Length: 189
Image 1 (cartoon, one colour):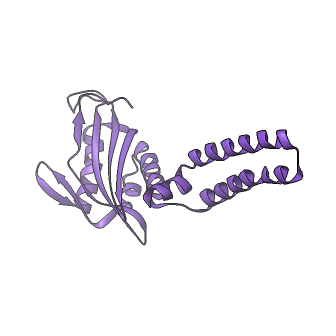
Image 2 (cartoon, rainbow, N blue to C red):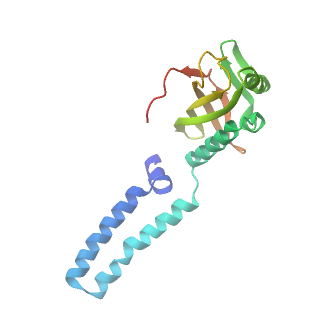
Image 3 (cartoon, helix red, strand yellow):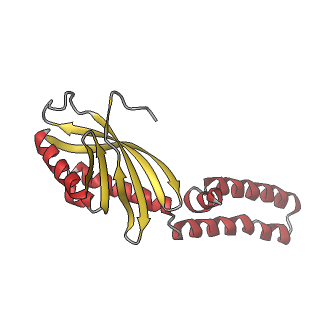
């Protein structure tokens, strides 16, 4: 079922290729026969392609909604808008760290103090991986922290964030984050 959903609503390229191949076959048949009936059949793949396009454009899947939430999160992170990022955290949000788990308000406070302490000027999103099951998801976001100082021990380090999401009435929200990991290198994709 997931494969059909993905094929029809998120990535219909394979359908378009199959419909183009069918159109080509029908065109060859029409060139050989030149009948009205075969000419009418040329419209079938075109009508199906138009239907797939309308269907794909009108349905927004949970995966697409999560991708949009990640893009918005990235825009807020680039300008260090911690309050806008905090809007994506559930009320019972937890951040696992070296000192144990902290809640939403402590995580927001920690982020604000880290921006000043490490002289962070921007956070750039490099890549993300996504695993989904129904209304739960886990993403691993790789970011580059842009700093004006060498306080972290390296200039502009790459950091991976493992985020656990839930989908509810307000859309996708982060319910838990694992301790961020400094990366020695960024995997090529």
